Amino acid sequence: NWKKRRLGYVNMGLCKCPKRRVTNQFCFEHRVNVCEYCIVTKHPKCVVQSYLRWLQDCDYSPKCVLCSKDLIIEDCVRLTCYHVFHWACLDQYARRMPATTAPAGYTCPSCKVGIFPPTNLVSQVADVLREKLAGVNWARIGLGLPLLSEEVEPNKVNHVKNHVPNTTPLDNMVDGHRNSHDAVVHVEEPVITYSRTDSSGQQSRRVYKAVEEITPVGFDHDENKYKRKSFLEWFKRWLNSTSNNRRYHSGSLPSRYCKLAIGLVVAIFMIIIFVRLGRLSVADDPALDPMSNPNIKVNE
Image (cartoon, rainbow, N blue to C red; front, top):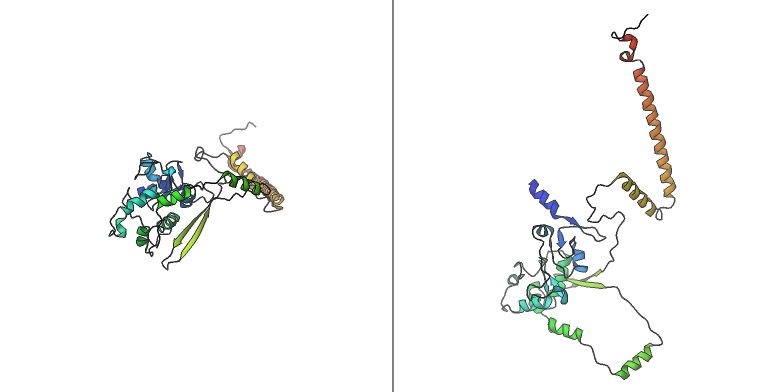
Protein backbone atom coordinates (compact mmCIF):
# COMPACT_ATOMS: atom_id res chain seq x y z
CA ASN A 1 0.00 0.00 0.00
CA TRP A 2 2.78 2.41 0.86
CA LYS A 3 4.36 1.75 -2.53
CA LYS A 4 1.09 2.65 -4.26
CA ARG A 5 0.74 5.83 -2.22
CA ARG A 6 4.33 6.80 -2.96
CA LEU A 7 3.81 6.11 -6.66
CA GLY A 8 0.70 8.30 -6.58
CA TYR A 9 2.62 11.20 -5.03
CA VAL A 10 5.36 10.88 -7.67
CA ASN A 11 2.75 10.88 -10.42
CA MET A 12 1.27 14.22 -9.31
CA GLY A 13 2.70 17.62 -10.14
CA LEU A 14 1.90 21.33 -10.07
CA CYS A 15 0.92 23.19 -13.21
CA LYS A 16 2.92 26.32 -14.08
CA CYS A 17 -0.15 28.42 -14.90
CA PRO A 18 -1.50 31.07 -12.47
CA LYS A 19 -4.17 28.60 -11.32
CA ARG A 20 -1.41 26.34 -9.85
CA ARG A 21 -3.53 23.21 -10.09
CA VAL A 22 -2.32 19.76 -9.09
CA THR A 23 -2.25 17.44 -12.10
CA ASN A 24 -0.76 14.16 -13.26
CA GLN A 25 -0.61 15.12 -16.94
CA PHE A 26 2.76 16.04 -18.47
CA CYS A 27 3.61 17.76 -21.76
CA PHE A 28 6.36 15.74 -23.43
CA GLU A 29 7.39 18.60 -25.75
CA HIS A 30 7.70 21.40 -23.17
CA ARG A 31 8.46 19.06 -20.22
CA VAL A 32 6.06 20.71 -17.78
CA ASN A 33 3.04 19.55 -15.82
CA VAL A 34 -0.15 20.81 -17.43
CA CYS A 35 -3.71 20.99 -16.17
CA GLU A 36 -6.70 20.49 -18.46
CA TYR A 37 -7.18 24.24 -18.83
CA CYS A 38 -3.63 24.61 -20.18
CA ILE A 39 -4.04 21.53 -22.39
CA VAL A 40 -7.02 23.17 -24.07
CA THR A 41 -5.68 26.73 -24.34
CA LYS A 42 -1.87 26.47 -24.56
CA HIS A 43 -1.03 22.89 -25.57
CA PRO A 44 -3.77 21.88 -28.06
CA LYS A 45 -1.32 20.10 -30.41
CA CYS A 46 1.29 18.85 -27.93
CA VAL A 47 1.89 15.25 -26.91
CA VAL A 48 0.41 14.99 -23.40
CA GLN A 49 0.34 11.85 -21.27
CA SER A 50 0.77 10.99 -17.60
CA TYR A 51 3.94 12.03 -15.78
CA LEU A 52 4.55 8.42 -14.75
CA ARG A 53 4.58 7.35 -18.39
CA TRP A 54 7.12 10.07 -19.18
CA LEU A 55 9.34 8.77 -16.36
CA GLN A 56 9.14 5.28 -17.84
CA ASP A 57 9.74 6.35 -21.45
CA CYS A 58 10.37 9.97 -22.44
CA ASP A 59 10.53 9.26 -26.19
CA TYR A 60 7.65 10.68 -28.21
CA SER A 61 6.69 11.47 -31.79
CA PRO A 62 5.12 14.86 -32.62
CA LYS A 63 3.39 13.37 -35.67
CA CYS A 64 -0.11 12.15 -36.37
CA VAL A 65 -0.38 8.38 -36.11
CA LEU A 66 -2.83 8.20 -39.03
CA CYS A 67 -0.91 10.23 -41.64
CA SER A 68 2.65 10.43 -40.20
CA LYS A 69 2.71 14.21 -40.63
CA ASP A 70 3.49 16.83 -38.02
CA LEU A 71 0.58 17.65 -35.75
CA ILE A 72 1.26 21.37 -35.88
CA ILE A 73 0.50 21.77 -39.59
CA GLU A 74 -3.25 21.03 -39.36
CA ASP A 75 -6.20 21.37 -37.03
CA CYS A 76 -6.07 18.72 -34.29
CA VAL A 77 -8.46 17.06 -31.88
CA ARG A 78 -7.62 15.45 -28.54
CA LEU A 79 -9.51 12.43 -27.24
CA THR A 80 -10.25 11.74 -23.58
CA CYS A 81 -7.27 9.36 -23.51
CA TYR A 82 -5.18 12.49 -24.36
CA HIS A 83 -3.99 11.11 -27.71
CA VAL A 84 -4.10 13.84 -30.35
CA PHE A 85 -4.73 13.44 -34.10
CA HIS A 86 -5.42 15.59 -37.13
CA TRP A 87 -9.14 16.22 -37.20
CA ALA A 88 -9.33 15.47 -40.93
CA CYS A 89 -7.46 12.17 -40.44
CA LEU A 90 -9.68 11.09 -37.56
CA ASP A 91 -12.79 12.01 -39.53
CA GLN A 92 -11.67 9.92 -42.52
CA TYR A 93 -10.69 7.09 -40.18
CA ALA A 94 -14.22 7.03 -38.73
CA ARG A 95 -15.97 7.42 -42.10
CA ARG A 96 -14.23 4.29 -43.42
CA MET A 97 -16.01 2.20 -40.80
CA PRO A 98 -19.27 0.47 -41.75
CA ALA A 99 -22.50 2.40 -41.25
CA THR A 100 -23.72 -0.30 -38.85
CA THR A 101 -20.82 0.26 -36.44
CA ALA A 102 -21.97 0.72 -32.85
CA PRO A 103 -20.78 3.79 -30.89
CA ALA A 104 -18.47 1.54 -28.86
CA GLY A 105 -16.79 0.45 -32.11
CA TYR A 106 -15.33 3.90 -32.69
CA THR A 107 -12.07 3.62 -30.78
CA CYS A 108 -8.79 5.50 -30.54
CA PRO A 109 -6.30 4.36 -33.22
CA SER A 110 -3.51 4.29 -30.62
CA CYS A 111 -4.95 2.76 -27.44
CA LYS A 112 -8.37 1.46 -28.59
CA VAL A 113 -10.25 3.51 -25.98
CA GLY A 114 -13.67 4.78 -27.02
CA ILE A 115 -13.70 8.02 -28.98
CA PHE A 116 -16.97 9.29 -27.53
CA PRO A 117 -16.59 10.73 -24.01
CA PRO A 118 -18.95 9.37 -21.33
CA THR A 119 -21.98 11.52 -20.60
CA ASN A 120 -21.07 11.83 -16.92
CA LEU A 121 -17.47 12.92 -17.61
CA VAL A 122 -16.87 16.52 -16.50
CA SER A 123 -13.70 17.63 -18.24
CA GLN A 124 -12.61 20.58 -20.36
CA VAL A 125 -10.92 18.20 -22.79
CA ALA A 126 -14.18 16.26 -23.08
CA ASP A 127 -16.14 19.49 -23.66
CA VAL A 128 -13.86 20.47 -26.55
CA LEU A 129 -14.11 16.97 -27.98
CA ARG A 130 -17.93 17.02 -27.81
CA GLU A 131 -17.98 20.37 -29.58
CA LYS A 132 -15.75 19.00 -32.33
CA LEU A 133 -17.67 15.76 -32.76
CA ALA A 134 -21.02 17.56 -32.87
CA GLY A 135 -20.19 18.83 -36.36
CA VAL A 136 -20.27 15.42 -38.09
CA ASN A 137 -23.18 13.00 -38.38
CA TRP A 138 -21.24 9.81 -37.61
CA ALA A 139 -20.31 11.28 -34.22
CA ARG A 140 -23.69 12.83 -33.45
CA ILE A 141 -25.19 9.35 -33.41
CA GLY A 142 -22.73 8.29 -30.74
CA LEU A 143 -23.40 11.46 -28.75
CA GLY A 144 -27.15 10.93 -28.89
CA LEU A 145 -27.81 14.04 -30.99
CA PRO A 146 -30.10 14.43 -34.01
CA LEU A 147 -28.47 14.26 -37.43
CA LEU A 148 -27.52 17.38 -39.32
CA SER A 149 -29.41 18.23 -42.50
CA GLU A 150 -26.25 19.56 -44.18
CA GLU A 151 -22.80 18.36 -43.24
CA VAL A 152 -19.57 20.02 -44.35
CA GLU A 153 -16.47 17.86 -44.51
CA PRO A 154 -13.28 19.19 -42.87
CA ASN A 155 -11.44 19.34 -46.21
CA LYS A 156 -14.11 21.62 -47.68
CA VAL A 157 -14.03 23.86 -44.63
CA ASN A 158 -10.26 24.25 -44.89
CA HIS A 159 -10.59 25.03 -48.60
CA VAL A 160 -13.12 27.78 -47.91
CA LYS A 161 -10.93 29.27 -45.18
CA ASN A 162 -7.85 29.31 -47.41
CA HIS A 163 -9.69 30.82 -50.40
CA VAL A 164 -8.94 34.51 -50.95
CA PRO A 165 -11.20 36.45 -53.36
CA ASN A 166 -9.47 38.14 -56.26
CA THR A 167 -9.72 41.93 -56.38
CA THR A 168 -8.88 44.25 -59.21
CA PRO A 169 -6.33 47.06 -58.83
CA LEU A 170 -9.15 49.58 -59.23
CA ASP A 171 -11.00 48.12 -56.25
CA ASN A 172 -7.82 48.25 -54.19
CA MET A 173 -7.29 51.92 -55.10
CA VAL A 174 -10.89 52.79 -54.16
CA ASP A 175 -10.65 50.90 -50.87
CA GLY A 176 -7.29 52.50 -50.07
CA HIS A 177 -8.65 55.99 -50.76
CA ARG A 178 -11.75 55.26 -48.67
CA ASN A 179 -9.79 53.94 -45.68
CA SER A 180 -7.00 56.54 -45.83
CA HIS A 181 -9.14 59.18 -44.07
CA ASP A 182 -10.01 57.13 -41.04
CA ALA A 183 -7.98 53.99 -40.30
CA VAL A 184 -8.73 52.06 -37.14
CA VAL A 185 -6.71 49.04 -36.10
CA HIS A 186 -8.56 46.70 -33.77
CA VAL A 187 -6.68 43.82 -32.18
CA GLU A 188 -8.75 41.20 -30.46
CA GLU A 189 -7.50 38.84 -27.81
CA PRO A 190 -7.62 35.17 -28.75
CA VAL A 191 -10.80 33.67 -27.37
CA ILE A 192 -11.56 29.97 -27.70
CA THR A 193 -15.23 29.05 -27.46
CA TYR A 194 -16.49 25.61 -26.66
CA SER A 195 -20.02 24.36 -26.22
CA ARG A 196 -21.37 21.42 -24.29
CA THR A 197 -24.51 19.55 -25.24
CA ASP A 198 -26.77 18.47 -22.38
CA SER A 199 -29.20 15.56 -22.42
CA SER A 200 -32.10 17.93 -23.15
CA GLY A 201 -30.51 18.97 -26.45
CA GLN A 202 -29.56 22.49 -25.36
CA GLN A 203 -26.02 23.63 -25.84
CA SER A 204 -24.27 25.56 -23.09
CA ARG A 205 -21.32 27.53 -24.37
CA ARG A 206 -18.10 28.08 -22.48
CA VAL A 207 -15.49 30.67 -23.30
CA TYR A 208 -11.90 29.99 -22.36
CA LYS A 209 -9.83 33.12 -22.73
CA ALA A 210 -6.12 32.92 -23.29
CA VAL A 211 -4.56 34.19 -20.07
CA GLU A 212 -1.12 35.68 -20.11
CA GLU A 213 1.08 33.69 -17.80
CA ILE A 214 2.06 35.73 -14.75
CA THR A 215 4.89 34.62 -12.53
CA PRO A 216 3.80 34.88 -8.87
CA VAL A 217 5.99 36.18 -6.07
CA GLY A 218 8.40 33.56 -4.79
CA PHE A 219 8.15 31.43 -7.92
CA ASP A 220 10.66 28.57 -7.96
CA HIS A 221 12.09 27.36 -11.25
CA ASP A 222 12.89 23.74 -11.88
CA GLU A 223 16.60 24.30 -11.34
CA ASN A 224 16.30 25.37 -7.69
CA LYS A 225 12.93 23.97 -6.65
CA TYR A 226 14.56 21.41 -4.33
CA LYS A 227 17.29 23.73 -3.06
CA ARG A 228 17.25 24.42 0.68
CA LYS A 229 16.22 27.99 1.41
CA SER A 230 18.43 30.01 3.76
CA PHE A 231 17.16 32.27 6.53
CA LEU A 232 18.20 35.41 4.62
CA GLU A 233 16.23 34.31 1.56
CA TRP A 234 13.19 33.56 3.71
CA PHE A 235 13.46 36.99 5.37
CA LYS A 236 13.82 38.66 1.95
CA ARG A 237 10.68 36.94 0.67
CA TRP A 238 8.82 38.04 3.80
CA LEU A 239 9.86 41.66 3.20
CA ASN A 240 8.77 41.40 -0.45
CA SER A 241 5.36 40.09 0.56
CA THR A 242 5.07 42.94 3.05
CA SER A 243 5.84 45.55 0.39
CA ASN A 244 3.36 43.96 -2.04
CA ASN A 245 0.56 44.03 0.53
CA ARG A 246 1.24 47.69 1.35
CA ARG A 247 -1.03 49.00 -1.41
CA TYR A 248 -3.92 46.79 -0.29
CA HIS A 249 -3.65 47.55 3.43
CA SER A 250 -2.84 51.19 4.06
CA GLY A 251 -1.12 51.82 7.38
CA SER A 252 -0.31 48.14 7.96
CA LEU A 253 3.47 48.61 7.67
CA PRO A 254 3.88 50.84 10.79
CA SER A 255 1.68 48.53 12.81
CA ARG A 256 3.75 45.56 11.66
CA TYR A 257 6.98 47.26 12.79
CA CYS A 258 5.32 48.23 16.07
CA LYS A 259 4.34 44.63 16.73
CA LEU A 260 7.85 43.51 15.85
CA ALA A 261 9.37 46.01 18.31
CA ILE A 262 6.97 44.96 21.09
CA GLY A 263 7.80 41.31 20.50
CA LEU A 264 11.52 42.07 20.63
CA VAL A 265 11.15 43.95 23.94
CA VAL A 266 9.11 41.12 25.45
CA ALA A 267 11.73 38.57 24.35
CA ILE A 268 14.57 40.58 25.94
CA PHE A 269 12.56 41.00 29.14
CA MET A 270 11.90 37.25 29.34
CA ILE A 271 15.59 36.49 28.83
CA ILE A 272 16.56 38.83 31.68
CA ILE A 273 13.97 37.25 34.01
CA PHE A 274 15.18 33.71 33.27
CA VAL A 275 18.82 34.73 33.84
CA ARG A 276 17.95 36.28 37.21
CA LEU A 277 15.94 33.24 38.27
CA GLY A 278 18.80 30.95 37.25
CA ARG A 279 21.26 32.86 39.38
CA LEU A 280 18.94 32.85 42.38
CA SER A 281 18.41 29.10 42.12
CA VAL A 282 22.14 28.36 42.33
CA ALA A 283 23.03 31.03 44.90
CA ASP A 284 22.19 28.81 47.93
CA ASP A 285 23.31 25.53 46.40
CA PRO A 286 25.66 23.78 48.92
CA ALA A 287 27.32 21.85 46.12
CA LEU A 288 28.78 25.11 44.85
CA ASP A 289 29.99 26.26 48.30
CA PRO A 290 33.75 25.54 48.62
CA MET A 291 33.55 25.55 52.43
CA SER A 292 31.11 22.63 52.38
CA ASN A 293 33.31 20.47 50.16
CA PRO A 294 35.34 17.97 52.29
CA ASN A 295 37.97 17.60 49.58
CA ILE A 296 38.91 21.26 49.84
CA LYS A 297 41.13 22.10 52.83
CA VAL A 298 41.48 25.70 53.84
CA ASN A 299 44.55 26.60 55.89
CA GLU A 300 43.73 28.32 59.14
